[in-house]
Length: 205
Image (cartoon, one colour):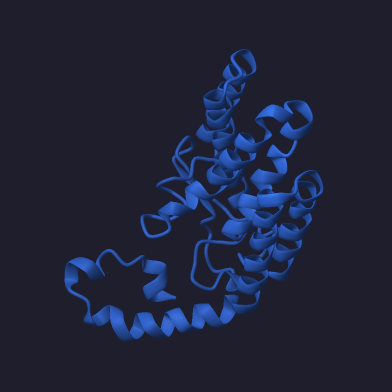
């Protein structure tokens, strides 16, 4: 799924805080959104393995939620929601497509790495690939709760995420073609030590 979909999923979940503990709603939404994005910071460093923990994040989030419930402060709530966002992202990657340049071709059996199991989890492809039309549909649906519950900066950020999602969906396949062309043109000209750092899926895609 798109990074924006992951962020919107985390923000939608954190919208519950507006009902349960409205005084912590802003920090909950912000922390969840950052947590929902965080795992994808490994996109050029063994993507969906380095910062993705589909088992350990949920365990840590559960522990952090217990601490936040017992000692509700800005810090404990922020940590709990950050971990919840990261957990939701990591776990839901298994529902999407594989780890490949053109995931709509369904040639990869790697969705997300489970450090607990010591292996890659296979893609279920309920959302066929990041930027698929159904991915945009999911993003739009997830945007509804925070748009209903909040106004101002939160609503504006959510609307912007939906707009970015729509643009990415429109350009997803052309971008893959462009990257494959650029990689074929530029990667062979890179110094060997830099070329070795380019993810295999980009070069071979």
